[in-house]
Length: 316
Image (tube, rainbow, N blue to C red):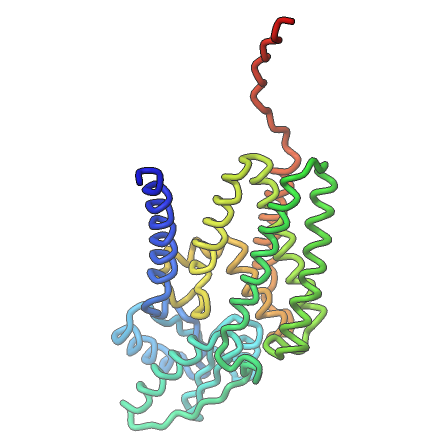
């Protein structure tokens, strides 16, 4: 019975880690510094900002724009999450950038308009596709890239392969996984449609990055490197990215962690590539590139193994 106690304790701790990370991050979404463009004189924007700050302190970041065209451009370039046109009684959102963001922003500003005796019309300038009306496909699609990235590193780590062969295997797997997964998400399911080649490129970058990092960890630490990678990129990385909610709707300290991990930035890169014409890719690609470089360093740096003690030769 005592032999069974250790595995039971271990799986219980694993379950607690998953529950604490996922449920803790995603159970109560609250906006934090959500940027909203307001096309109005500075005085009106200031009054609006003050009213919002009184109702929900720190929830929104009001940014004044001189004209509607500039504000809509900022929405399409992912600088803001919504555009408020007070003089027209209109709110412009982009559900493709996050279903939760567009829903909460709509609720808050509609309630504010009703309190002032006004009716607010809502326009979705960048809607979600019919193949993903819930807006969850992007997050699960990234997970479908992370698992193969970890798996290829584990599989090639078992055999006597050179560093060049390991990098080549990871690159080949990244391309084939990206081609297949993008085909399913775009052509078959229509969940991430309209930018197949761009989706393939970003998908390959995510899988390649994860494969390099995990390969380096396995080379450096052996089997424990796989556990460390799973903890960092799945248990922490997925919820810290905001999951289907988005990073601005989870605790800020956790979102800060997610911003430097490849999972969250990979999700942002895929969403911006497919739905926003490739805007705002500098930060996601920089983070992915930094992690890929770290993986290469782990693969190339010399590792000293402890020398084995000489075995006694039995006498004849």
